[in-house]
Length: 236
Image (cartoon, rainbow, N blue to C red):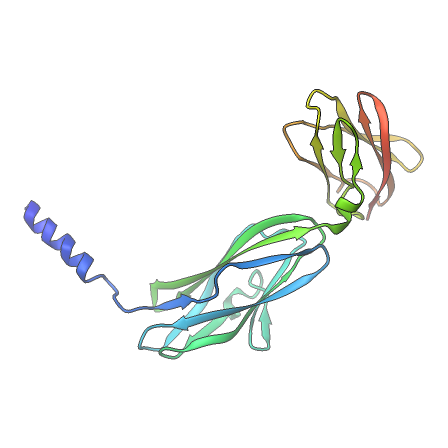
């Protein structure tokens, strides 16, 4: 019995379930690197390495694309939002065909962040026949480094995005982990709104401003109860 199973295993290795080559993604290292408020387009190249025609549908989008980022997949001049037009994204490939009119458009949005996503294409006639296009993105905020406060105990950037309507973030780095630092938010007329202790083990303070009324607020950095700097935050 063991000999029979061993022979079967060898046959499976020599003659796999589907030995015909399928579709291969020739585009490698699909990376989107840009600044807040910009967009980029990347060309994708895929090849049908089989000797038969292939049809593929976009089955699903997987990843952590933020609410302020937008993604489109374009086939020639026709562009689709894979989060809304999933069923409309279809590819037909001839035997040996190399497709070069496939594009990804990425809108970097209004929040500094990074992440990745995957587009899964599946042959509707055979769920084993599939290919995946994966990409990563990195959204930077050029204004953050230019407006950084450098204190002896902590360096801290400005709030972003600014204006904000949901989440506001501040990046910081403790030079002295024993320092007591906090961010205090006040209304335009000076009424206290919220207070956040800065954790030396973290690098980013995330503040939910969704419940704040639209208007101008001020946030202040305190180190050991001393006022270091005050800046403006606009909530839309």
